[in-house]
Image (cartoon, helix red, strand yellow):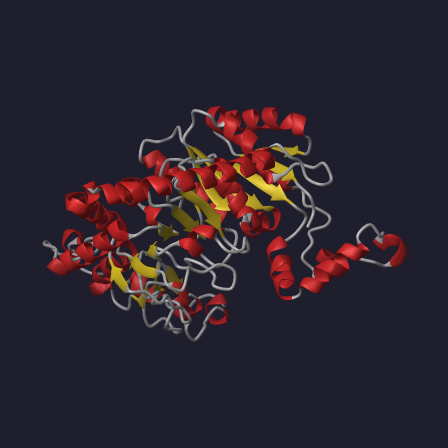
Length: 503
């Protein structure tokens, strides 16, 4: 909620304009600034319906698909007096103006989808935020394990499935090529996903049957979007998947020898693929960068070890290292890794304060909040405010900064369109910009952050944060242990700047 400039200027009402800034700040349509990002926005013009408008706003904010709401009011409205009513009207009663109840699937939909999955040879589930609720996370696990269905997370906003299960097919954001499980699937069930795949890099088989379950299957706030499929249903994934599990269990086909043989064949191939993937991840965790510097997988393995026995709530805004964090955290519980879901950067800082407050209110003060962020993204989080807030509201958290010397995402986006620039940069590598005028591609694209800011000093000055810079393998374990101790025992923020190879 925000105020607007007063709507009168000569003292006609209490709150009328009386400062020069009231004219400077006047804009024709303040709500337009954020309208495209809101579930609902409105103006409170009189105190007599303020309660109704606030309750309506909360209904939108808490009903799926959940999102922010924005209200404004002029100062005269906020200063206006209204008589206190002895009895609330029904429209002013919070208990009578609640969020929508979650909806499931119809009997016909449950029958069709259960029959399709029972008859599939190579089914696949693709999701991005089924795990936004604990119920959705658990129901997805039960469904996948019941029929041995592999699960792929594409551009996940929440962690949706245990990465330690052989059914997990990994994560994919940008790049990565064709996902084998998607290409070979004869049935694909998309559950709660804004971008289930990027067709230019990975897509399902043309003969695959696709079904879509989502709280927002039409993506009503997105102008260009399509997902051709057999059927699509608007539903709460946790509720619907629990229904689906119960329906499948009640079917006679679940006990047939034919189904068991197909399941056993899937188990063998999926375990083989999982072991190969795990071997690749293990190799990455034991390797340093080309220049001998730390890597994200190497650091994540040691951080994971230092966090053994703790429940970690990770906030992943690592941009080009989103996948590395998700792959190497090796999580198996719901709400272990959360992303912003938005198009802007700098979310990690306010999110860390909010997450810590929420965990405290839920009696989970022993949980460790870890914000993973790149060096450029860290600056977008207004750290001078963030760490001051964390100190004031006693919400300590650990920040991991991947310092690669710039904004790698726009550089990579450019190279996807103009790969020849990468070849030119490779040919020029090793030449000194000080001697022959050859500059790095990052400098030419103006995405470099050089010289590097003193990240830790900024956090220390703003909120008394503890900080260290990790550059050598032998110091990583001690730095991780000390940082965790600072957050858990000293109750103040800790910042670890991890220096990795430059972009």
